[in-house]
Amino acid sequence: MSEVLVLVDHVDGAVKRSTFELLTLAARLGTPAAVFIGAADAGARVAEAVRAYGAQRVHVVDDAPIKGYLVAPTAEALAQLARQVEPAAILIPSGAEGKEVAGRLSVKLDSGLITDAIDVTEDGAAVQSAFAGNYTLTGRVTKGTPIITVKPNSVAPVEAAGAGTVVPFAAHISDAARTAQIVATQPRQATGRPELTEAAIIVSGGRGTGGDFTAVEALADELGAAVGASRAAVDSGWKPHTFQVGQTGKVVSPQLYVANGISGAIQHRAGMQTSKTIVAVNKDEEAPIFELTDFGVVGDLHTVLPAVTEEIRRRRA
Amino acid sequence: MNIVVLVKHVPDATADRRFEPDLTVDRVGVDGLLSELDEYAVEQALQIKEKRADGEEVVVTALTVGPEQAAEAARKALQMGADRAVHVSDDAIAGSDALATSLVLARATERLGEGAPVDVVMCGMASTDAGLSVVPAMLAERLGLPQVTLASVVESQGDQVRIKRDTDAATEVIGGTMPLVLSVTDQSGEARYPSFKGIMAAKKKPLETWSLADIGLDASAVGLAAAYTTVEEAAARPPRAAGEMVTDQDGSSAAALADFLASKKFI
Image (cartoon, rainbow over all chains, first blue to last red; front, side):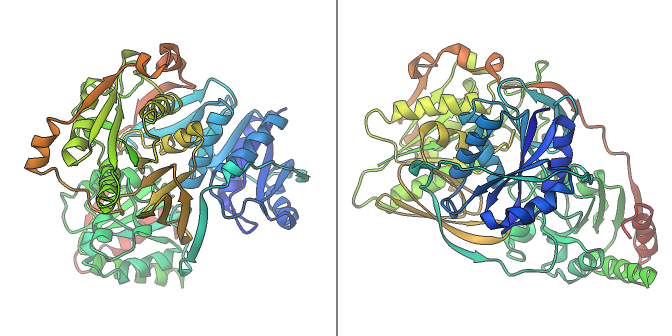
């Protein structure tokens, strides 16, 4: 069986959960193989992590010559690797950078690209959601090597023993690919909460918070959730843009989304409508968000959220 | 200096957007407008022009691809202050995927650069319809240019560009040298409204329509038949079943909400 390449998403060699999801999907299409672009000496640690999810091979590309350069070198390395192993498909995490890498790669390999897939089936079809989740599209790549970017939380990772054989790959990166460069990085202060795009549960607040996110954050912490915000809350300066859920912020698809004081404008819905379970708390019973909810509470979030947080705490005690 | 800003005419997100029987987006039967996210790109292009007003001449060209109505997006860019516009329109383009669209944009950009080279190709962060966000990367690859994307702040001096952007983990400053492809987010600064003067002036600005032949492309290279992907099915999502609703009185809903979360195994 041909290999299916999965680009490993990691922070300094610590592999993210989305990689395991992609390996699970890769096993449906062929032999799962991970591609790790990072510090060569972290290769063994990455192999240890990905073999538990079925990776038979781990192609390690030393990033020493390309660290700090954006997108183009990664696409170059992947294209060279793909020409060598002739994979059945290439799966890439659907973040901003992943999609740019995929875009360049599809031109290089003269191959079709499907972005933001939420599922991949055994026969190679990819499922996407379109128009703010109002449509579900099923499509497939018909030319070249299928390149598919997959959204986080699309599938539950399945553990499977793989050989995890480390295979170093020497990529030849052109000077032309090393042109856009990160010149400064300021890490954001760690919140201790999960990343918005990867969280299984998100509790978010909008205009109805009046700028006070205390109750929203308390419920989020009780549920081990990430905190999100609507565009109205971000535009009011209550939360930085990195918290924004919606078309121009993060597009999320968690197991549970709790919208508080958010009316449910199309902008926001486009970013959260594919969440598996949706709960909303809003004072206005006519708010469009209630068209989406599995459970809706008409009431003041500043009363409801502390009460339910307390109730959950009591039940857990 | 030459700046090309890409603008897209999209179905109005508040209208009832739908698919055609051939599973392409209905771009004709639905009201459309200049993609809101492209207005930020026009704005940043105009700001570069204005900041350099003293020393050098900067020409901002709006470039759009699409059916007849797409010219409206180009016209809006002219009203905002772009100097000229080009609309690539050809029946053969209908149904083009991102790869074919980027090919058309690349050839059109190359033609625009024949007189004086293009220094910056400015894009929005995504379209508000398909929302793939891959066209800037594909275009950069085709043109052999670096890409500096998702800028919330853009600064340029001479041929150097510095942008600021927010990723999940950090705020980054990215540097690049022109020529390059640049994309900006909705955080980059409010886009201006066309003034009455701008609207009147736009009527006199050149808006050229180019066919595929004008940019040296064969019809077989684009359109639905040349697509690298197919859509086999577009299913309208079943409306969500009406959920449970409760009205809260001084926290009275807490038990019911906790019961619901427990029934779904979240607690």
